[in-house]
Image (cartoon, rainbow, N blue to C red; front, side):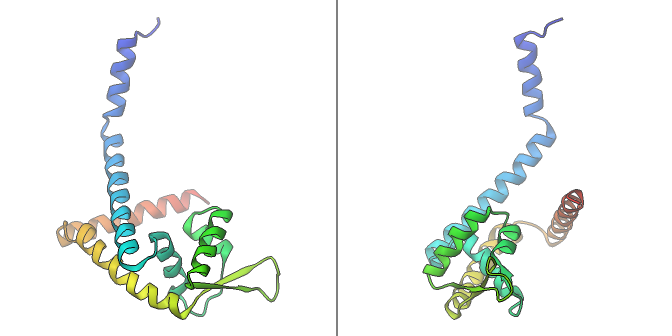
Length: 163
């Protein structure tokens, strides 16, 4: 028995309107909108992108750690060439510097410059303000705690699934 176009339309509409599709869509739309707000504020107030801030966060988190471009690509889920272009722009802007690995010429470590650390501190304040306004403030404290706990559980399940 062949399905009718009307039947297929009904099935497709039910699938598109399912609770799971709508809930996940809400998560993605909210995360995307928040990221856009953060990126816009950072560009306007600090002259850097949200992705550049993510690099600086990673580099400033443990000041004595040597971080390679490859590690940054993995941490930021960027391609190797995308990371190279990003680090090129950040180096041109005076935010980071590359250092050759003494043990492997193919490896380049990335460090924040003094200007990069200053830019990071300014950008971190802008980031915090936007996150507080649109991620924390709309929720009751208990709801926020539940949300961050749930996101942690989802992240763990995804990481465990990669093993």
